[in-house]
Amino acid sequence: NARTDTSHEKHGQCAARATIFRKWLIDVYGIEFLSQGAGVLDVACGRGELAFQLLNLNGIPAIGLDPRPLEVDIYAR
Picture (cartoon, rainbow, N blue to C red):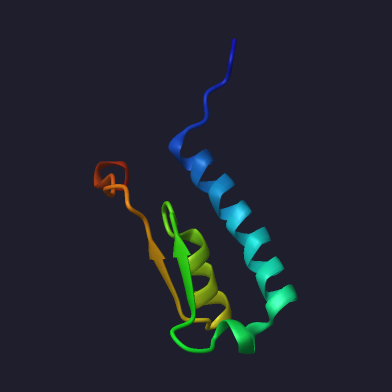
């Protein structure tokens, strides 16, 4: 029996990947550099985890841009 991931589990996996990438960006480029200009543009951001974390955890301006339409129904409770 193959186990399928729930939406909550997928969200957790995306958040974990965003955390790893956010830490790498900060280690390599530094907060000061990433905060220059308009900040970070995350292209094909999906749910926007990286931009959310950069802004809310590190104060780095960040914008997420995804060309796919937002699936609002998966966020509705």
